Image (cartoon, rainbow, N blue to C red; front, side, top):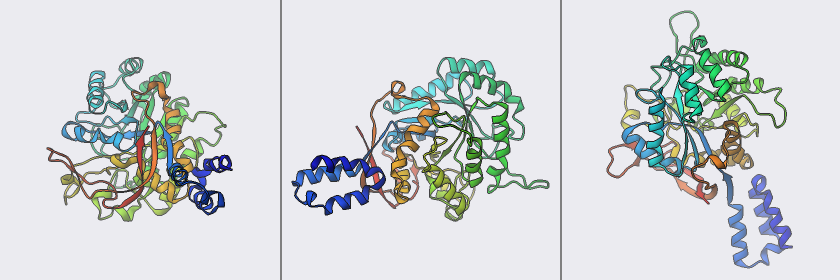
Length: 404
């Protein structure tokens, strides 16, 4: 009877709470020793997530880099895909390599994947060499002026000048990471603003895929139903077991937020901005869908509190890194989809980027643990002047992470 009882524990991913209640009501459970009951409760409250990955991470420079880089592992992440929008942007091999060394020194158990910043400073030759030497895994494309440190970005209305680079990327199996928004335009013609900037970008995504059908593309931090629908449309003929070429990354905060949550609240203000309730529902549905073309990229973007709590020039960015997996687990649990969490934060992204255990600097696996935690109001650091405002301050979450 005990064998049958423990065999039923495999159902906990989908029916954890219901199964536990049923077990506790059974005569078999009541006859067990207290130590066996404790083991059952512990098993039902732990979910192994494997080699978790965050495929959109901002770690900044200087003092900020020093304090937020260790938080990647604290937040339950093994693999971090690093954004290149530093000052100046990362556009040469030597600086990218040095940046990775600096990050690795601060977080020796985290695997860092590096990127170039798409600009006219890059050439196909530089990109090919960087790929051959294993310096980069992809290139990030920022439309000029749409978010933090994107002034050196590109014109999203015409990518043709970068087609030689995209061809090289296709040949070298590099990933093109797109910040999928068009810059705002208000002076006649077609109005573009923060609420429709993502939707206006989508035709460019379809064109890029048509022109480079074997180029791996990520539409990053999607915020709209239109973006989700576009990814479904591109992958409508994808066969079982076939690898998608165009995918989307989804953040934790966009699974929670709508426009009402950031209007008047600078802590929730980010680019792209959270949109309407129907958009949030589409994002959450995509995240828990079990489709391999939707996976996690936090876009955790730290800014000192002084740059968020100001009436002039509020910086765009939500800081989630320190509790990254816990935030995602919270919303998956709320909709009864914890069984889909491992695919979203581990399997799908790692498959797309070609990551497996042999490529990791640390083989530890992440375990989700049922345990209440409270997000601090402000995060401070010893001997540092920096202060960070985390996402969902002073709220309680029901999950945390451990390493095994």
